[in-house]
Length: 360
Image (cartoon, rainbow, N blue to C red; front, side, top):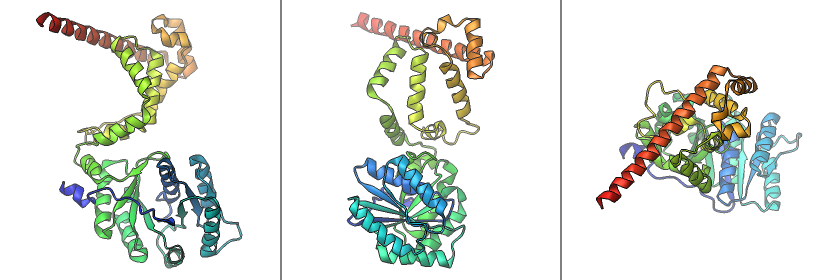
């Protein structure tokens, strides 16, 4: 509880009173542009109608990156004309554009630098004073440790930030940065980036990070991820096949897809109680892709009836997947062991049920 309090206690919501304007600030490389798109995606999912506005007039590549990300998350993006060099004039034009789009949240992706300098601070102050944003969110890289704390201090002194977006928070050792940044700024951490994908972004929940730091896991977060990723009918169908030991390689692939929708396995394992601090626990995503390649090289009939996989078929599968026959054999052996275990478990359950009926 004390650690949760240090991390901020409760979740800190965004202030989205109209006109809802969010200024995203931070150094280059912290993930500011990507976080802007991730936030837009999250708000859109919550029923809002956000727009993304490019304010980095010094870097055409940053404008193009935001435009590309906007297309990916299906959110309109304002890109200033190449000749525009005044950030306030550009922001004024973007507001007129956003109002014509009838959008209700404006997210401004501002210029960054390799380090904080006076020209950057002055530009951001001018933009802040003109926009009067409800939120000024500092995007900081949790992996940089003490440097992130120094960055947070300087940005807060210059702009009076309203919250922090902590990126690359997909490792437990990085919880210390969250603690320190919260302490030096006295501002809440509002969002956390948990990976590179656009859907790996969520509201920051202090007690969950506290649980992960202490090795207690994040079961609530895991359940939420599963609920988003798993189709109930598909899950019921797979559960029935597991119970009846009729599980085949088509079901195996279906499970793979469900797991993929939940995100990287390392993140999922880290949410389990006691697993985040297990030394030497390496989840090899490449190994999983190799297994998937082997299964995809089977014919539909072979996936349904693995028992027909003779030596000739196994050689063909190995060639098709770019793996060795030994790897194919190892996968089949493990798969058959799993099916036997399911079968024996099913028999045991039926026997226990019969014994219970005999007693009654």
